[in-house]
Image 1: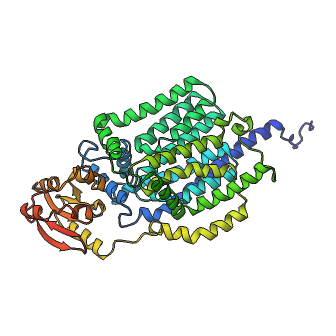
Image 2: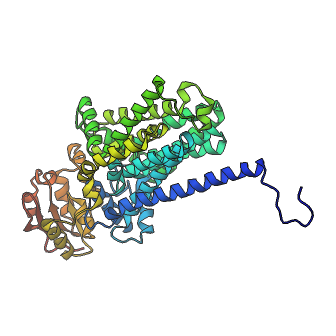
Length: 496
């Protein structure tokens, strides 16, 4: 004991040291999460400021946001083929962005950062800090995820909710509380209410909640999910939401066979996610070597792993079940498009995080595949502006009466020209034409309305409907051609 009046302080004891460790862990968590979020945002800034629409969905949802600014209601007037939560989220993002032209892209920008941080949060629950960072970086740089979180798409925010739910559920498996069970369920509900393809994350959440055998908490999880879905759907009408966001997608024509869908998954991962594939391959080699006993595996840092729960509830099993269920759903989905592969990336990245490969081989592999990666995602990392014909069409639309309505099978051109459409025809996808929701007669009938000033045919979707005779009878005149089937028909006497 130091003498009275001495300036010597007693050494910190074990209790002080124990208090320091959680503080350091929290500090490192915040620093890592902030850095990862910044990286994710920076990768998406070029797409955010792009002067053109980047994908069909980017243009379609950008136009939907423009319609909602003018009071058009989703599901009642505005055709809404995604979950009932997506367009409200887009409306809020548009407000946050001060309703500038690119303001709706605030939603995918935030979703890209959120899904990256959520992946890191899940990784910190089940793996080392290095593994968690690696998994989050794979998600942030994934080409598949980039295609759904650079331009506007419902998959991005759905992924953010889904991965957030799994992260909370891993926390529940470590320290179970009713609040965590409820939050995890609510996040699953939000994911499903945004994009139904995110539903398999709910299986992972259910397994993790079941692992603690607290059946009341499982009821909280399921109940919270149901409440969120109903709360998102009820304002628009359950029947309308079901018809437009569920039945419409289920009734779509099948794009490929089941083997063809598997091939599409493989080709998409090869093109857009070489980082994920080579890292997963290296991680698999490390895992096999460890399993064979040639290398002593690192001691798992997670209390979940240390407790060695039954095989079904271990992190690796939960992630494999999530990944397998998601893959099965994508293959089963009739209208399976390449951007949907983004839903496979978070569980795959978290599996890599469990046993990250050595740094040197990882860096060598990453450098080797970088040129291939850049060649397949360059349209999002440094997007071009419109070409001469596209810009001419936008300029022509801008010269038309600003308060009129316009019809086009390329909604992105209307969005970038700041022109509204007839709400029913906001989505001009081939699925709607195949299901008879959009026909030549319906388009012609809509075009006869006095406030419809122009019809822009841009793709085979409307060109194959042979609209010219019907539009001529309705008083439209062909005023410009932009090459191929691209034609602008204008009604000189429209009265907006």
